[in-house]
Image (cartoon, rainbow over all chains, first blue to last red; front, side):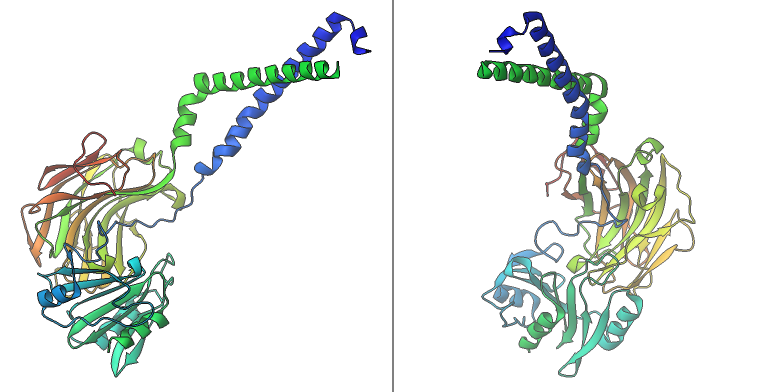
Length: 197
Length: 245
C-alpha cells in the first residue's frame, strides 16, 4: 500500500535510474566477458617443429597398394612372418600393404596401434648400423639380442619432442624388419618379434 | 502490488540489459568488428600443402627455388610457418631443407633450417643462422645424397659446402616432396617454388620433376596447391587441384 503513496514522478525517476544503471553495467562488462570467453583461442604454444605430412592414407609405404599377406608374399618373393600375440596376430591384422617394385611390405594391426614393415636389408652389418644409429641419435636406444641376432630397441617419447614411437628393428634371413607403435612399449614389441621366430 | 512492483523492476532491468547489449554490439560492429573478427577466427591448426614427383619414387636429391614471403607476412605471424623441400621414406622418415619463421620461438626473421626423422626420431628444426635470407626473394635449397652412403647433405643458395648433414639414414633414396606449412589458420601458406628438380641417381639432376602432382592438402579448403609445370608450383587461395585431408 505504501508504494501506492509514492508520487508518480518519483516512481518514474527511479525507473529511469534503474534502466540507466543496468545499461551502464552491461555495456561496460560486456567486452570483458567477451574477451574472457574468447582469449583461449588467441594463446597458442607450439614448439619450433616443422613436420611434413608423410603419407596420404594409412600406408606407411610410398606408392603402395592394399593386398593380402598371401598376395604380398607372392609379390615380394620372401616369406612374411606374422606375429602371434595378444597385440598382433592374424586376427588383429587390419590391413596389408605392398610395394611390388621396391619389395616392401607393411602390416597394420588393430587399426594402426602397431605397424610392421619389412624389405630386403639395405645395409651390410646390422650391428654396426645399429651402433651408428645410437651414436648419432639423441633418443634413448639400446641393442638387445634375439637368438644371437642384434635388435635395435628405441624407447618411446625420448626424442626432442617426446613424440617418437616405440621401435624395434632387426634382420632375419636377409629381411629388414621394423616394428613400431605409439600405443605399446618396447617390451610388447620384443614379444611380438619373438613370436615371429 | 508486490508483483506489480517486481514486474516493473524486472522490466527496467531488462530494458537496461537490452540497451547495454545493443551498445556493445554497436561498438563491436562499427568500430572494432574487423580486427576482433579476424583475431577470433585465428586458431591453432597445423596445415600442410604438399606436392611430389609422382614419376620418381627413388630420388637421391631434391632441389629448387623457394619464395621467401614478404615482411608484412612474416612480421605478422601468429605461429611457426615453414617452406621446404624434402625426400620422404617408408615408415614416416624423411630429410627436409628450407626456411621457417617462428615468432613464438624467437625466430622473427626467415631462417634456413634442416630437419630429419630417422626411425621415428625427430631431429627437431636445425636452424642455420649463418646465412641471411631476404624477404620477398627466391632462394635455392637442395637436399641430396651424393655419396650413396645414407648420409644426406643440406645446401642453401648453391653454396659449395653444406650447412648441415643428416645422420646415417636407413635409405639412400626416396620420394621428392614440396611443402608449405603453417600452425595458425591466419598465417599465410602462400608460396612459389620453381626450377624444381630431383636426382635420379647420385649427382645426376633431371631438368625438372618427372610428374609434379599434389600430395596432400590439409588446409580445409582455404589454400590450394597449383601445378604450373613439372618444375614450378604455387600455393594460393584461388585454385584447387588437390585432395583434402
